[in-house]
Length: 196
View 1 (cartoon, rainbow, N blue to C red):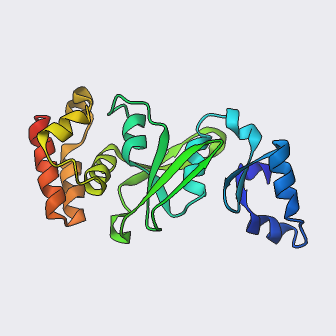
View 2 (cartoon, rainbow, N blue to C red):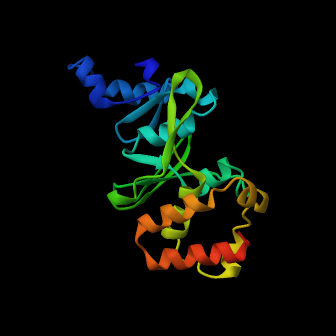
């Protein structure tokens, strides 16, 4: 199981049907394992390896991809360091806290599960991550209070990134796929506020 980095109890039972589930509790207490959420565990050694807190975000609640504030911080589009790893999912909204971090999942309908790509990380693994354009749209869509110039300015988006790296055409194409007038208005306001 170690090579999986994280696993669920069903994988253990498939491998060893008579496994004593009390071992999980004992091994967590001894520090061999970390409980990621109910039924999901990781080996404590992965705490010191870079990128695994993101990797686990994808694994413990699927389907999901990292987006919103976590993705915007990753791309350097917002100045704040983000404590919570935020993801988008078709499952119900949920939050999990464990030794690897705080994980928050926001629900969207299935048609909005697009605009993410696989990013390579250590050990030949990959993480599902929103593109910068989709992370921004997910934020504007899921947080409707970003509906004034003042609110958008308080996001403190990196203007160099917006002008040099953000794909405005892709942003607009993606926003059309949401089929949301309210989001269209917020995107127009964003373009005006940051002079894109």
